[in-house]
Image 1 (cartoon, helix red, strand yellow):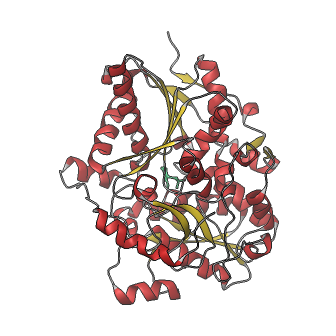
Image 2 (cartoon, protein in one colour):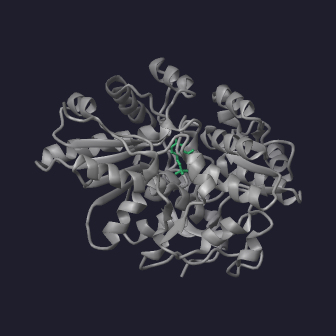
Length: 454
Ligand SMILES: Cc1ncc(COP(=O)(O)O)c(C=O)c1O
């Protein structure tokens, strides 16, 4: 029997995170203070983040120790399995070899728990009592709610309004873990009230929910803010995925020609891809692909610029590919990918053409998810299904060229709370949302007043 899954023991949970900043030739320009437009220092971030995480944010050390207690928490679900998708390959009729790392094995349902536990730990250690955050489809909110309950922290989640309505059971899951969940935009913050005034039925966006969560945290001494993607320290925490996957691919006797991850803010893609990119930056070539929705095409159609991470202009200005911080993506079911920007580290790698980006439309993504579920038995989260769609594309392309590749993608989460999306798909109610060049350009106009990265 040929093996289908490649497992590691709990002893093999990584002891250190991998920090790609140690290996980059070109570093992203520094984040700028939203008021003074000068580079920010650790003290500027202190009102909303604990110092332990701020130090990780700016570190250039190659390997950063995972605190023992966080590693002990990881034992609940790590190492996650890596599968050889043999049945899926057969269904596609491809000669490509397709492997996937399954982060949906985490109790919260996705990769997000890797950073949620680390962030909750550093906050608890520094005496923080309450965390606020945003969530799209609810994967990040569920993960942070669970982590907060493990560390005895209160948790307040601003959930993008359209997802709040589309995914009521994610909301109930967060409540089960003890969090308070509010639809965003809400009337509880100045940022939310401003938006509701112009449109009481606003569908919300991650950018708006971030503004609300930051505003809430900034007003209370016992509260800090927690971000589920984009920032260096979040990408860092996710590298446990790729570090494990490297060992597992070794067990499988393969090295990937192509590494693929879906990309919202960038931490999921980075988590799998960065440990492999360490090899690429040191001379072992492979292709690395970040996949996004065609209706929120940050990396494929956005501009590289300084921009705010949120709609309310409360965050530092970050150098990144962006569609403009006022961009409101269409209400696709992959709520976790509806973000206007991409992590500065991922953006820098795209800019330097070290990695690639692809975008796919909603219906073709669900077509891919269906084929995957019917052969591998796992119902993918709509976000994760973007990576599956890309894997199919690359396998078919390799077959045509006579060079079938070894493909590795991150199955970042399961879709058990996304069945309304599948019901809409099977009921023919899903649509592909066109996005005109004019509307992108209109949204990018907000960038004109902002500094240009050097
Ligand atoms: C299941 C799943 N996969 C991928 C992503 C994208 O993650 P990131 O924002 O870290 O790129 C999300 C985001 O919420 C998600 O929930």
